[in-house]
Amino acid sequence: MKLTHNTVFITGGTSGIGRALAEAFHRRGNQVIIAGRRQALLEEIARANPGMDTVELDITDPAQIKAVAQHVIKRHPDLNVVINNAGIMPFDNAASGELDDAQATHLLATNVLGPVRISAAFVEHLKTRPEAWIINNSSVLAFIPLAVTALYSATKAAIHSYTLSQRFMLRETTVKVLEISPPWVDTDLIHKSGDPRAMPLDEFIGETMEKLQGDSDEIIVDRINPLRSNPGPNEYALIAQFNQSVIDNPIPVA
Ligand SMILES: NC(=O)c1ccc[n+]([C@@H]2O[C@H](COP(=O)([O-])OP(=O)(O)OC[C@H]3O[C@@H](n4cnc5c(N)ncnc54)[C@H](OP(=O)(O)O)[C@@H]3O)[C@@H](O)[C@H]2O)c1
Image 1 (cartoon, rainbow, N blue to C red):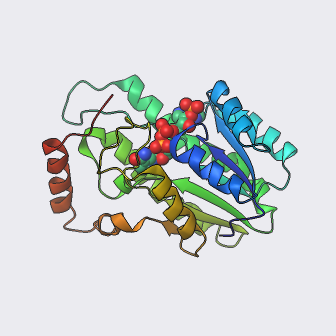
Image 2: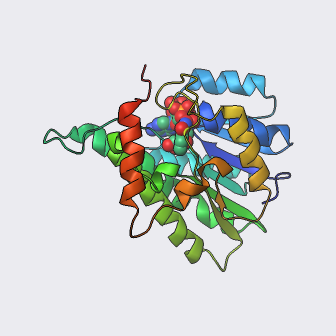
Image 3: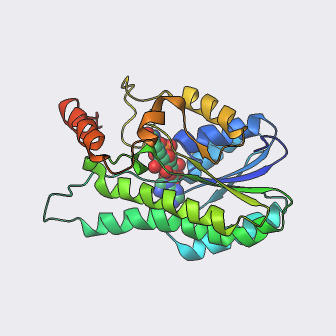
């Protein structure tokens, strides 16, 4: 995709990957609008990046999504890029009879219905632009689930699948659909720990922006190519090995 002369709306712009992607587009001279729930952070990031616009949005609220989309499109009629980035990653236990139903429902509303509703709220406008992109942030866990975040991994597999359908359905429009599938990146998603297995955020953003500039539909940093290639009839062997390694060397939590 082109990395300049865009108007970019990004959810989850208040921290981690979303903020860093927003700032990378801002530095290249694009008009960027970040969304998130934390108003104080939105204000702080706007102050640090003069010209960046902000909007408060909870992506689990369908009415708010529609209202924010109308507001953003009215304020920025050149809007041509929507990045579905916001997400949450709670732990769960797929082997337990005690399901935290409220957590599961909130997770699906955030990670699956959020991007689906955001896409629907913006897509008719995007079709009117000469060149437009929807970029969905899934995860490497879409391809190799982390068993201690079973439903999170399943939401990301759902986003991967939805992205493939969306790309096909929009194939004869001006809207291209891209997917970013990050590896473990050192952000607050679980707990920013400096763990050597996590990719430093600035390295991840550097490689991701470089790859976004190419013509690939899937943006995947080189270090996880083997994991992306794992799905298939014998996929469980690597899934078991990967999850055993996480049991042996647990992910640091706050
Ligand atoms: N870090 C990783 O290892 C990794 C790996 C693969 C994929 N990802 C994906 O990357 C995306 C960003 O994660 P991150 O690592 O940057 O984590 P992060 O720093 O925790 O950022 C998550 C962002 O999502 C926003 N958000 C969460 N719930 C929301 C809601 N209901 N409404 C609106 N915004 C909401 C948060 O903003 P507010 O709190 O201000 O609303 C925050 O800006 C997620 O989709 C995640 O699944 C991350």
